[in-house]
Length: 66
Image 1 (tube, rainbow, N blue to C red):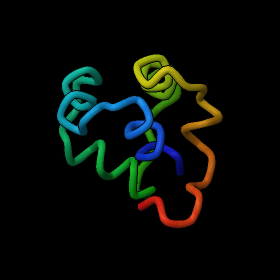
Image 2 (cartoon, rainbow, N blue to C red):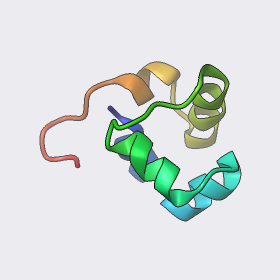
Image 3 (spheres, one colour):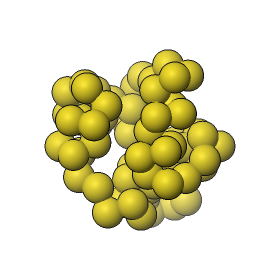
Image 4 (cartoon, one colour):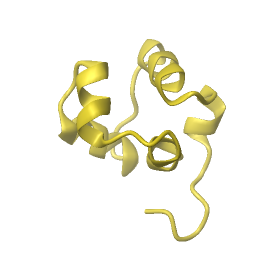
């Protein structure tokens, strides 16, 4: 998924994102690795924080982005 790509494009750290979202850094990493996915309301909040769309968050990462 595009969680990490969008975070990097938005120039945000996992720590900043976790603080904004009210979750742990491990939760952010879990979303980025595709182990879990945030609830719909969190997807909207995350997309707003990153300045992207929910669709961008849910897209597959291009090769090389881990």
